[in-house]
Length: 175
Image (cartoon, rainbow, N blue to C red; front, side, top):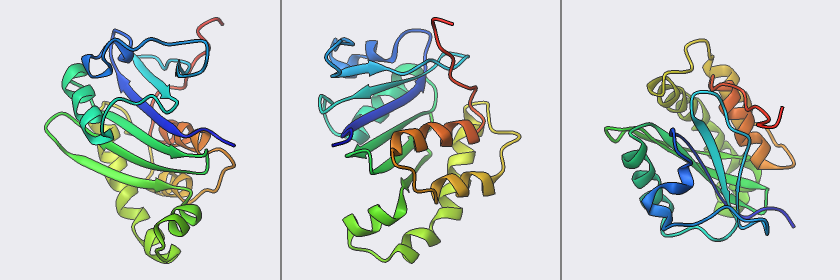
């Protein structure tokens, strides 16, 4: 059984977990809430294992308001499929599915229908990344390629998408 929960990606000088929307939640050793390796510039990702407070859209909006920076959330089901939602200050939003075959089955929609939305989804994701100050060298076709991938763990696919969007590479904080 894979991971089911939320991945929250954003930029802050403080840990994102400190945002008021998380109600004083703490990183823990039991795997309820864990931080991924940080990315330079204050970019960070937090993984919530079934302990996410409230509706994803409300949490995303609250994180953007608290940080004043674009943020993205991946709602992951069993490490197989994820719905991404991105938001920037000022309200421009985008969403996209990762692992389209499984998403099509879950949604009972034709794969071709989901696939047809990938070019527009990639352009919106790239515009979001550019609003975050990255992505100038990124190509929409490289982003489409990731969106059409079928990795075993969709969390890794999300991380790869952030790389392709031009965010700085994650670094081991102990290195």
